[in-house]
Each structure stands twice: as structure tokens, then as C-alpha cells.
Image: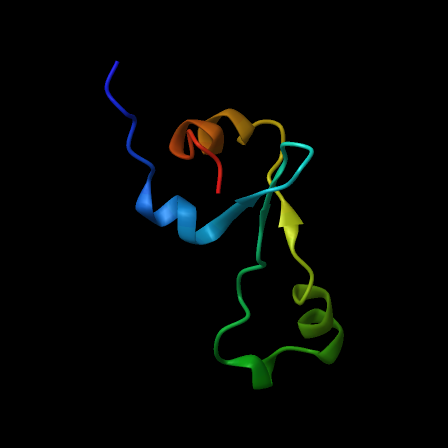
Length: 66
């Protein structure tokens, strides 16, 4: 079997945890932050986890984990 290529965009956006979940950084945190409330910006600092519905899609793009 040949090697499976890792999706370049996915490896920059997702990290696999020790338990097998995929973690990613929140979006809407780059620019135009003066329009957003402090509470929203504070909540966006935390990362999120990929839900179970999309887990198999991310796992297919990252066959060897990252």
C-alpha cells in the first residue's frame, strides 16, 4: 500500500489529543475586533473540539495524526 497524503490545510488547523479528539482554535478572532464585545472575544480565546458528526472527516484528512 502506498502512503496516504495528509491534507495540508487540515494539519494547520487541527491537532489530535491523546484521547483521539481533534482540537481547533476558534474563528472570528483575527480582525475587526473593535466591533465585538469583550465577553465574546474572551470566549473566543478557548479552543473547541470537533463534533462527532465531523470526526470521521477530519480523521480521513489526518491519517497519521498531528
